[in-house]
Length: 251
Image (cartoon, one colour):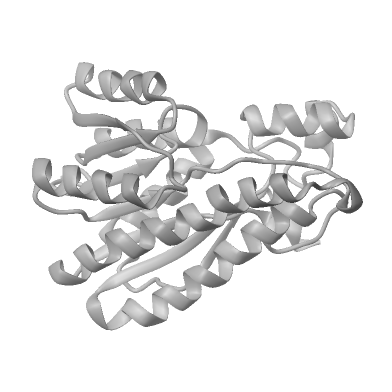
């Protein structure tokens, strides 16, 4: 049987990159997928690809920083599929900038997406899961939430917040059968790494040289981890952090 057979998943930022690949993988493993993205065209494309492959999905425009939009996403998911088993809080933005140059507007914008968006997702989805006495939440943090780096005060603060919120929520909801874990990717070959490469003036090849395994991570590497955490294979795993960085933080 497929690893997510019969499960319903919400994936934010599902129009591109890690979110899109995970949505496609979830559908292949039997999940019904709610694809959300601030760019509806991208979300629609992901959902269309799932349906063309024989899966079940719908898309919805979604600014994760807006509480009323979270309420609408949850209401539509429950109306269409009657339950929610998995939430992948994947949506996020990346800014690399020296501490003294960070504007308050930049700080507030990034925090509203990377931190408030995760909080709102948990706030509105986890009570649904608690009523079902089961569910899995996977929050996208980063190795920037574990270790420091120049230019990462803003981004690192947001991902550190996601890390500890995950643990707090996991303890609060453990007795309700709801599991909450965080993933911490390093350099994954996506648009964010292209931005980092350009910003810090290091090519992707140079970034890969700094990874003990000698390569950048792939969206497949991340999707594989998220799939494990979404599935019943990880039924005794909660409040934990999973690093996907080719050994970079092991140094």
